[in-house]
Image (cartoon, rainbow, N blue to C red; front, side, top):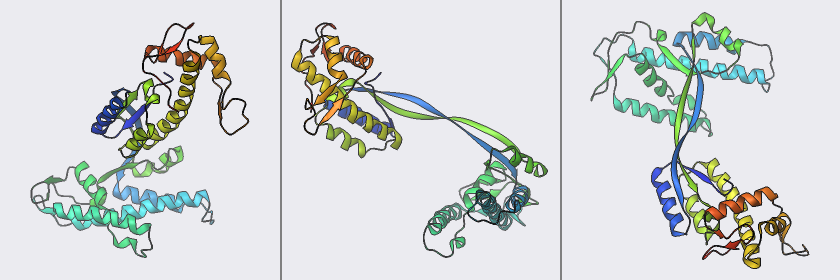
Length: 324
Protein backbone atom coordinates (compact mmCIF):
# COMPACT_ATOMS: atom_id res chain seq x y z
CA UNK A 1 0.00 0.00 0.00
CA UNK A 2 1.26 3.46 -0.91
CA UNK A 3 0.31 5.09 2.38
CA UNK A 4 1.55 2.30 4.63
CA UNK A 5 4.85 2.71 6.45
CA UNK A 6 6.80 0.24 8.55
CA UNK A 7 9.34 0.67 11.32
CA UNK A 8 11.62 -2.04 12.71
CA UNK A 9 11.92 -1.86 16.50
CA UNK A 10 14.69 -3.50 18.49
CA UNK A 11 12.41 -3.51 21.54
CA UNK A 12 8.86 -4.85 21.67
CA UNK A 13 8.10 -2.51 24.57
CA UNK A 14 9.03 0.54 22.50
CA UNK A 15 6.92 -0.73 19.61
CA UNK A 16 3.95 -0.82 22.00
CA UNK A 17 4.77 2.69 23.20
CA UNK A 18 4.86 3.99 19.63
CA UNK A 19 1.46 2.44 18.92
CA UNK A 20 0.11 4.12 22.05
CA UNK A 21 1.48 7.48 20.91
CA UNK A 22 -0.09 7.00 17.47
CA UNK A 23 -3.48 6.47 19.08
CA UNK A 24 -3.06 9.64 21.14
CA UNK A 25 -2.38 11.57 17.91
CA UNK A 26 -5.42 10.09 16.17
CA UNK A 27 -3.63 7.52 14.01
CA UNK A 28 -3.19 3.80 14.45
CA UNK A 29 -1.00 0.90 13.49
CA UNK A 30 -0.41 -2.76 14.15
CA UNK A 31 2.49 -4.82 15.40
CA UNK A 32 3.63 -7.71 13.26
CA UNK A 33 6.57 -10.09 13.30
CA UNK A 34 8.69 -11.05 10.36
CA UNK A 35 12.23 -12.24 9.86
CA UNK A 36 15.34 -11.42 7.90
CA UNK A 37 17.24 -14.33 6.36
CA UNK A 38 21.01 -14.51 6.65
CA UNK A 39 23.74 -16.90 5.69
CA UNK A 40 27.47 -17.01 6.27
CA UNK A 41 30.25 -19.20 4.99
CA UNK A 42 32.32 -20.83 7.70
CA UNK A 43 35.52 -22.82 7.75
CA UNK A 44 36.62 -25.24 10.48
CA UNK A 45 40.24 -26.30 10.91
CA UNK A 46 42.73 -27.15 13.63
CA UNK A 47 44.65 -24.28 15.23
CA UNK A 48 47.92 -25.65 13.84
CA UNK A 49 46.31 -26.02 10.41
CA UNK A 50 45.08 -22.41 10.42
CA UNK A 51 48.53 -21.11 11.38
CA UNK A 52 50.27 -23.01 8.56
CA UNK A 53 47.55 -22.18 6.06
CA UNK A 54 47.44 -18.44 6.79
CA UNK A 55 51.23 -18.31 6.90
CA UNK A 56 51.39 -19.63 3.35
CA UNK A 57 48.68 -17.23 2.15
CA UNK A 58 50.39 -14.25 3.82
CA UNK A 59 53.58 -15.00 1.88
CA UNK A 60 51.96 -15.43 -1.56
CA UNK A 61 52.46 -12.84 -4.28
CA UNK A 62 55.30 -10.53 -5.20
CA UNK A 63 53.60 -7.12 -5.12
CA UNK A 64 55.68 -4.83 -2.89
CA UNK A 65 53.21 -1.93 -3.07
CA UNK A 66 51.68 -1.69 0.45
CA UNK A 67 48.65 0.14 -0.99
CA UNK A 68 47.73 -2.55 -3.50
CA UNK A 69 44.78 -4.89 -3.14
CA UNK A 70 47.09 -7.89 -3.13
CA UNK A 71 49.07 -6.47 -0.20
CA UNK A 72 45.84 -5.77 1.65
CA UNK A 73 44.72 -9.38 1.21
CA UNK A 74 48.09 -10.69 2.39
CA UNK A 75 47.85 -8.38 5.38
CA UNK A 76 44.45 -9.85 6.27
CA UNK A 77 45.87 -13.36 6.24
CA UNK A 78 48.92 -12.24 8.24
CA UNK A 79 46.61 -10.74 10.88
CA UNK A 80 44.69 -14.02 11.13
CA UNK A 81 47.93 -15.99 11.35
CA UNK A 82 49.20 -13.82 14.20
CA UNK A 83 45.87 -14.08 16.02
CA UNK A 84 45.94 -17.86 15.70
CA UNK A 85 49.48 -17.93 17.09
CA UNK A 86 48.33 -15.93 20.12
CA UNK A 87 45.38 -18.29 20.58
CA UNK A 88 47.67 -21.31 20.32
CA UNK A 89 50.03 -19.90 22.96
CA UNK A 90 47.13 -19.18 25.29
CA UNK A 91 45.77 -22.71 24.84
CA UNK A 92 49.14 -24.22 25.68
CA UNK A 93 49.37 -21.99 28.76
CA UNK A 94 45.96 -23.14 29.95
CA UNK A 95 46.10 -26.84 29.02
CA UNK A 96 49.69 -28.12 29.09
CA UNK A 97 50.23 -30.45 32.02
CA UNK A 98 46.58 -30.34 33.11
CA UNK A 99 44.63 -33.48 34.01
CA UNK A 100 40.88 -34.12 33.94
CA UNK A 101 39.23 -32.37 36.88
CA UNK A 102 41.87 -29.59 37.04
CA UNK A 103 40.65 -25.98 37.11
CA UNK A 104 41.48 -24.39 33.74
CA UNK A 105 40.25 -20.87 34.40
CA UNK A 106 37.80 -19.06 36.67
CA UNK A 107 34.74 -17.01 35.75
CA UNK A 108 36.58 -13.88 36.80
CA UNK A 109 39.56 -14.70 34.55
CA UNK A 110 37.19 -15.13 31.61
CA UNK A 111 35.49 -11.79 32.34
CA UNK A 112 38.82 -10.02 32.68
CA UNK A 113 39.91 -11.57 29.39
CA UNK A 114 36.84 -10.17 27.64
CA UNK A 115 37.54 -6.71 29.05
CA UNK A 116 41.12 -6.98 27.85
CA UNK A 117 39.82 -7.60 24.32
CA UNK A 118 37.84 -4.35 24.44
CA UNK A 119 40.97 -2.60 25.67
CA UNK A 120 42.97 -3.91 22.69
CA UNK A 121 40.32 -2.73 20.23
CA UNK A 122 40.32 0.72 21.81
CA UNK A 123 44.12 0.85 21.83
CA UNK A 124 44.25 0.04 18.11
CA UNK A 125 42.08 3.12 17.40
CA UNK A 126 43.99 5.49 19.66
CA UNK A 127 47.59 6.54 20.11
CA UNK A 128 48.42 3.60 22.39
CA UNK A 129 51.80 2.40 21.05
CA UNK A 130 51.44 -1.09 22.52
CA UNK A 131 48.02 -2.58 21.74
CA UNK A 132 49.61 -6.03 21.88
CA UNK A 133 49.76 -5.75 25.68
CA UNK A 134 46.01 -6.46 25.71
CA UNK A 135 44.84 -10.08 25.47
CA UNK A 136 42.47 -10.62 22.51
CA UNK A 137 42.21 -14.40 22.68
CA UNK A 138 39.47 -15.03 25.23
CA UNK A 139 36.47 -14.99 22.90
CA UNK A 140 38.15 -17.64 20.77
CA UNK A 141 39.33 -19.58 23.82
CA UNK A 142 35.84 -19.89 25.31
CA UNK A 143 34.41 -20.96 21.93
CA UNK A 144 37.15 -23.54 21.38
CA UNK A 145 36.67 -24.99 24.85
CA UNK A 146 32.92 -25.36 24.31
CA UNK A 147 33.01 -26.61 20.71
CA UNK A 148 35.67 -29.21 21.51
CA UNK A 149 33.79 -30.26 24.70
CA UNK A 150 36.89 -30.20 26.88
CA UNK A 151 35.70 -28.18 29.89
CA UNK A 152 32.85 -28.39 32.36
CA UNK A 153 31.45 -25.21 33.89
CA UNK A 154 31.11 -25.18 37.70
CA UNK A 155 30.59 -22.54 40.37
CA UNK A 156 34.34 -22.28 40.86
CA UNK A 157 35.16 -22.05 37.17
CA UNK A 158 35.86 -24.33 34.25
CA UNK A 159 37.26 -27.80 34.88
CA UNK A 160 39.06 -29.97 32.32
CA UNK A 161 36.91 -32.90 31.15
CA UNK A 162 39.54 -34.73 29.13
CA UNK A 163 43.27 -34.49 28.66
CA UNK A 164 44.50 -32.57 25.60
CA UNK A 165 47.85 -33.82 24.31
CA UNK A 166 48.27 -31.09 21.69
CA UNK A 167 46.34 -27.84 22.05
CA UNK A 168 47.12 -27.00 18.44
CA UNK A 169 45.04 -29.95 17.29
CA UNK A 170 41.82 -28.44 18.68
CA UNK A 171 39.30 -27.35 16.06
CA UNK A 172 38.16 -23.77 15.59
CA UNK A 173 35.45 -22.32 13.35
CA UNK A 174 35.74 -18.89 11.73
CA UNK A 175 34.01 -16.97 8.98
CA UNK A 176 35.45 -17.79 5.61
CA UNK A 177 37.87 -15.04 4.62
CA UNK A 178 37.19 -15.49 0.92
CA UNK A 179 34.63 -17.14 -1.34
CA UNK A 180 37.21 -17.74 -4.05
CA UNK A 181 37.87 -21.30 -5.19
CA UNK A 182 41.61 -20.64 -4.86
CA UNK A 183 41.15 -19.97 -1.15
CA UNK A 184 39.45 -23.32 -0.66
CA UNK A 185 42.00 -25.17 -2.75
CA UNK A 186 44.92 -23.58 -0.93
CA UNK A 187 43.74 -25.10 2.35
CA UNK A 188 43.33 -28.67 1.11
CA UNK A 189 46.56 -29.76 2.74
CA UNK A 190 45.29 -28.62 6.16
CA UNK A 191 41.99 -30.55 6.03
CA UNK A 192 39.57 -27.67 6.57
CA UNK A 193 35.80 -28.18 6.46
CA UNK A 194 33.72 -25.55 4.67
CA UNK A 195 30.08 -25.06 5.52
CA UNK A 196 27.30 -22.54 5.14
CA UNK A 197 25.05 -21.64 8.04
CA UNK A 198 21.55 -20.27 7.42
CA UNK A 199 19.47 -18.54 10.06
CA UNK A 200 16.49 -16.26 10.51
CA UNK A 201 16.55 -13.14 12.66
CA UNK A 202 13.13 -12.05 14.00
CA UNK A 203 12.01 -8.44 13.62
CA UNK A 204 9.32 -6.56 15.52
CA UNK A 205 7.66 -4.27 12.99
CA UNK A 206 4.99 -1.58 13.40
CA UNK A 207 2.89 -0.94 10.30
CA UNK A 208 1.03 2.39 10.21
CA UNK A 209 -2.20 3.52 8.58
CA UNK A 210 -2.81 6.63 6.36
CA UNK A 211 -3.85 8.81 9.31
CA UNK A 212 -0.19 8.90 10.25
CA UNK A 213 0.31 11.76 7.77
CA UNK A 214 -2.48 13.84 9.28
CA UNK A 215 -1.06 13.81 12.81
CA UNK A 216 -0.53 17.26 14.24
CA UNK A 217 1.90 18.24 15.60
CA UNK A 218 4.09 15.85 13.61
CA UNK A 219 7.30 17.01 15.34
CA UNK A 220 6.17 15.17 18.47
CA UNK A 221 6.04 11.91 16.56
CA UNK A 222 9.50 12.24 15.02
CA UNK A 223 11.13 13.48 18.24
CA UNK A 224 9.67 10.50 20.06
CA UNK A 225 11.01 8.05 17.47
CA UNK A 226 14.49 9.55 17.60
CA UNK A 227 14.70 8.60 21.27
CA UNK A 228 13.72 4.98 20.63
CA UNK A 229 15.80 1.91 19.83
CA UNK A 230 15.05 1.56 16.12
CA UNK A 231 16.80 -0.04 13.21
CA UNK A 232 18.68 3.00 11.76
CA UNK A 233 18.03 2.18 8.11
CA UNK A 234 14.37 1.57 8.87
CA UNK A 235 14.04 4.95 10.58
CA UNK A 236 15.87 6.82 7.80
CA UNK A 237 13.54 5.36 5.17
CA UNK A 238 10.50 6.06 7.33
CA UNK A 239 11.54 9.66 7.91
CA UNK A 240 12.12 10.31 4.20
CA UNK A 241 8.80 8.73 3.23
CA UNK A 242 6.92 10.41 6.05
CA UNK A 243 7.94 13.97 5.25
CA UNK A 244 7.34 13.61 1.50
CA UNK A 245 4.05 11.75 1.71
CA UNK A 246 2.78 14.10 4.41
CA UNK A 247 3.40 17.07 2.12
CA UNK A 248 1.68 15.34 -0.83
CA UNK A 249 -1.26 14.07 1.20
CA UNK A 250 -1.97 17.36 2.90
CA UNK A 251 -1.82 19.18 -0.46
CA UNK A 252 -4.40 16.69 -1.75
CA UNK A 253 -6.56 17.26 1.34
CA UNK A 254 -6.45 21.01 0.73
CA UNK A 255 -7.53 20.61 -2.91
CA UNK A 256 -10.43 18.39 -1.88
CA UNK A 257 -11.43 20.64 1.00
CA UNK A 258 -11.42 23.73 -1.21
CA UNK A 259 -13.28 22.24 -4.18
CA UNK A 260 -15.45 19.57 -2.54
CA UNK A 261 -17.28 17.78 -3.86
CA UNK A 262 -14.65 17.01 -6.47
CA UNK A 263 -14.50 14.19 -8.97
CA UNK A 264 -11.63 11.77 -9.12
CA UNK A 265 -10.70 12.99 -12.61
CA UNK A 266 -10.58 16.61 -11.43
CA UNK A 267 -8.39 15.59 -8.52
CA UNK A 268 -6.09 13.66 -10.86
CA UNK A 269 -5.62 16.77 -13.00
CA UNK A 270 -5.01 18.97 -9.96
CA UNK A 271 -2.35 16.67 -8.48
CA UNK A 272 -0.63 16.10 -11.81
CA UNK A 273 0.50 19.72 -11.85
CA UNK A 274 0.16 21.10 -8.32
CA UNK A 275 2.09 24.19 -7.18
CA UNK A 276 2.09 26.20 -3.98
CA UNK A 277 1.90 29.09 -4.45
CA UNK A 278 0.21 28.81 -7.88
CA UNK A 279 2.16 30.25 -10.77
CA UNK A 280 5.58 29.78 -9.23
CA UNK A 281 6.40 33.51 -9.00
CA UNK A 282 7.70 33.12 -5.43
CA UNK A 283 9.47 30.41 -3.48
CA UNK A 284 7.34 27.32 -2.93
CA UNK A 285 7.02 23.73 -4.02
CA UNK A 286 5.36 21.62 -6.67
CA UNK A 287 3.91 18.13 -6.89
CA UNK A 288 3.54 15.97 -9.99
CA UNK A 289 1.63 12.77 -9.21
CA UNK A 290 1.12 10.06 -11.78
CA UNK A 291 -2.67 9.62 -12.33
CA UNK A 292 -2.48 5.99 -11.25
CA UNK A 293 -0.78 6.97 -7.99
CA UNK A 294 -3.47 9.56 -7.26
CA UNK A 295 -6.22 6.98 -7.85
CA UNK A 296 -4.48 4.45 -5.59
CA UNK A 297 -4.09 7.04 -2.83
CA UNK A 298 -7.77 8.01 -3.08
CA UNK A 299 -8.78 4.36 -2.83
CA UNK A 300 -6.71 3.87 0.32
CA UNK A 301 -8.08 7.06 1.87
CA UNK A 302 -11.64 5.99 1.14
CA UNK A 303 -11.07 2.64 2.84
CA UNK A 304 -9.64 4.49 5.86
CA UNK A 305 -12.72 6.81 5.82
CA UNK A 306 -10.45 9.83 5.49
CA UNK A 307 -12.33 10.54 2.26
CA UNK A 308 -16.02 9.90 1.72
CA UNK A 309 -18.37 9.84 -1.25
CA UNK A 310 -18.11 8.23 -4.66
CA UNK A 311 -15.39 8.91 -7.22
CA UNK A 312 -17.74 11.50 -8.73
CA UNK A 313 -18.20 13.42 -5.49
CA UNK A 314 -15.19 13.09 -3.21
CA UNK A 315 -15.28 14.89 0.15
CA UNK A 316 -13.14 15.00 3.27
CA UNK A 317 -14.25 12.63 5.98
CA UNK A 318 -15.66 13.85 9.26
CA UNK A 319 -13.21 15.94 11.30
CA UNK A 320 -10.53 15.58 8.62
CA UNK A 321 -8.53 18.64 7.68
CA UNK A 322 -5.09 19.15 6.14
CA UNK A 323 -2.06 20.07 8.26
CA UNK A 324 0.31 22.50 6.60
